[in-house]
Image (cartoon, rainbow, N blue to C red; front, top):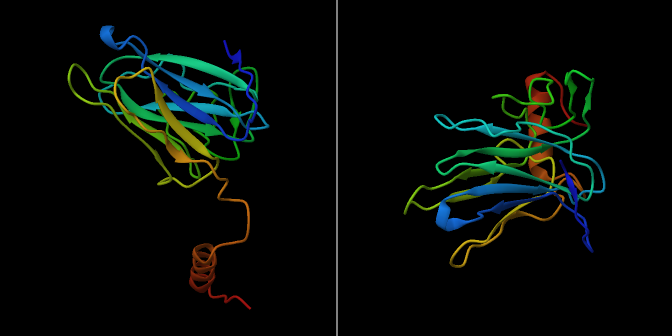
Length: 186
């Protein structure tokens, strides 16, 4: 069940890698929605690791959800936006859709989707995590480990890179598409 978190500034979705009880090798991910609107997080396990208990859910603005994991788990977590689902979990999302389902059940995100990628270590093996824009960008996203030994840094993108003027890269892409279609920009 999502839990309401009170924050002074709520500007971006925040994925916190929460490594609880490090001595007993238990860990969990806490996903906090700091956007001013609802998001629908999705999860996808990597090859050879089990799906998390929830592979997709609604998360209203200002709420958090904790999902337990196991040592050695690897996969992705992302936030979907602009979703509508019926009572049986069928629907669509404007960004990050996973085959039109509330629960992604092994389906990845349709770009664009900002991704949190992680591989949890076992025993003395280290954890690895990053925020990736390889599948495009749909929301600001930060991953911050908590409750771990040593200095671990947050990583991600705090800025909404979709806000502002169109970039030269976007213009070049549009121009190339138009050229392939036989049109030109005027």
